[in-house]
Length: 283
Image (cartoon, rainbow, N blue to C red; front, top):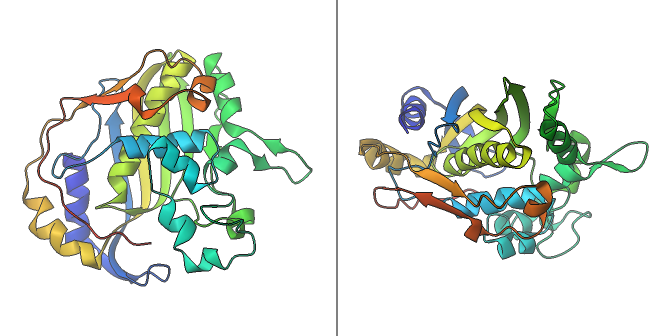
C-alpha cells in the first residue's frame, strides 16, 4: 500500500500533462514505476485507502487463461470489464474484423492461448509454460505475451499489461509482469491483484513455491477528472493492513482453471478498507 500511495504522490507532484488521443482527456503522467508483491507471505495487494474489489480482477484473468474473445463470456465469469471496450468504442464498432455484439477480437487471452503462426497453425504459449514449470524447467524464456503488433487492427484494445515472465530459482517461482500503460486510480488495483494472483495460481498448479511478483509499469498516469479525488480524498487516508488471498486447494491443473473453476473458489481474509471513491472511467 505504501508503494502504491508513493506512486500516486509522485504522479501528483512530478507528473507532466499529456493529451490522450484515444480518450480525449488529459492526464498527469510519469515514466517508469516498479512495484513488488510478496506472494510467499500472502500479502495480497488490495487497495485499503478506498473500498476495492478483487473477484472481477481474478475473473478477468481467468478469462485470459481460457482464451476468451467475447465480453459475454467474461460476464458469465463475473466481470463486466470488457463490455465498454467491446461495445462502446466507436473505432472498434466500425472495424471490419468485429464479429458483432460483445466481440473483442484477437486480444489478450486469444494471443496467449492461440497465437497465429505465420506458417500456419497456432501456438499455445501458456500450455508450454505450465508444462515446463511443472517439470521444474526454466529455459529463461518462460514468457507469456499478449502483445502482437501484427494483429492490433483485429482487436478492440491493445494490451496494457502485456507480458508475464516466469522464473524458477531454488524451487521458488517468480514472476515479472510488464505494463505499457496504467490508469493508476482505477486500473492499477486490478492489475496488482492480477499479477499477484497469476504467480499464486501458477505456483499452485505447477507444484512450486511462490516467491515475489515484480510489476513494471512504463507509463503511469492519473486522468484530469480523477485528480481532485486522488489529492483531496485518497491521499489523505492512512493505509490499513493487507488481507490474504484464499485459493481453493482443489485447483491443481490448468485444465481445472479452464473448466470448473468459478469465483466461489477465491476469497479474502482480513480485508479492511476506507469508504469507496467513485473515480471516472476512461473508455
